[in-house]
Length: 93
Image (cartoon, rainbow, N blue to C red; front, side, top):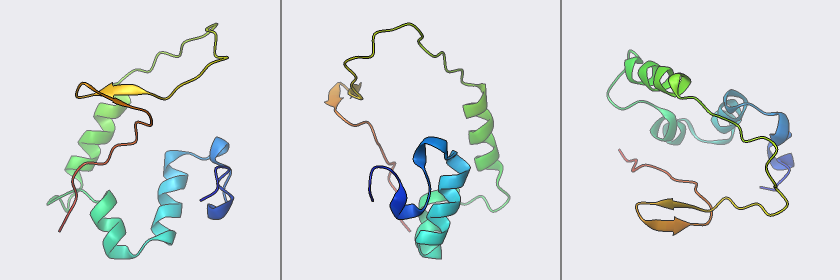
């Protein structure tokens, strides 16, 4: 996929998480999408609802008036430096 999102037909700067989820659903097979984005053993959707509610309660405090001439996505995960923190929990069937 190109950085600008053209391969998915969307401008990533203006896309929401829900937009990208819809694009993933059309680009992936149904079993793969369900394995990646479904909630394990919870057909009613309580796990998904609880996860979304917890995420909504988490506040994000933007840092303003901070020098951003040098940017980095690096962070530390389990005491290891990660240059691009895109993580995926174990999934399987």
